[in-house]
Image 1: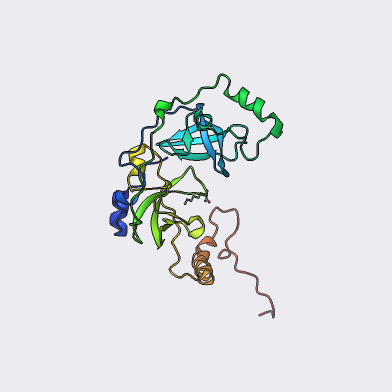
Image 2: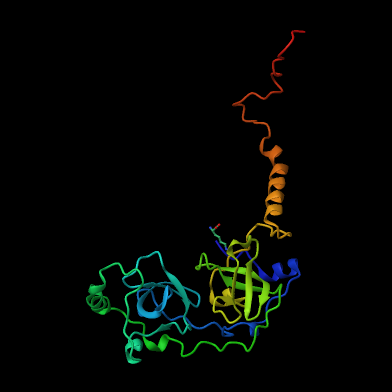
Length: 266
Ligand code: MLZ
């Protein structure tokens, strides 16, 4: 289910401001997605970026494609914006003098690659070049994020998710993406012109499902020991409640039968 998270309300509640769209390397109106599941295209292998492979569109979400490299398994799907420069129509690689490569972890013997390629392309539905976008949007001239600004960002550990996030720190051309309501495990640094970060409202425009913030409070103190201490004391506070009396009658409550007195008789 979706649609319960409202940036409007959330920004008011948190008193935060959103990063202006001029901070991002994204087009002002998200690029039109005219791809269909099953279409094939050329993509850079994310695990071996010097090789160009054949990929199949296995899913679509907003302006993004879920891609799977032909000859690979289904455990290494990746997502690309339709205006990414890392996807091209089939034929592009050869036209520029390159050769299509088997993906990293090709599930057959390397020597069977030429035949595999022939078979995978035979009768395939190739994404027509008119639905590709000519260019990626230009990168802004500089990193103009400020700490505390809100944005929407791909959760790189769960890349199908786009989540509410905050610029947590700046480091030259990089921004620390922190996820609202989640502890640091999902944080990452990326370049300010990364294609994985979007202005507030992006998912509403594309029809992507923006996740809700998590429910975990971020530690105020950076000491890991202190946050462990704090979470243990928080648990201790709720313990008595969880040990409350059983009232379904299946177990007698101690109040009905006072515990037998042990020790000396009266
Ligand atoms: N099931 C996963 C989802 C985490 C998503 C976090 N996004 C910032 C988990 O709970 O680990």
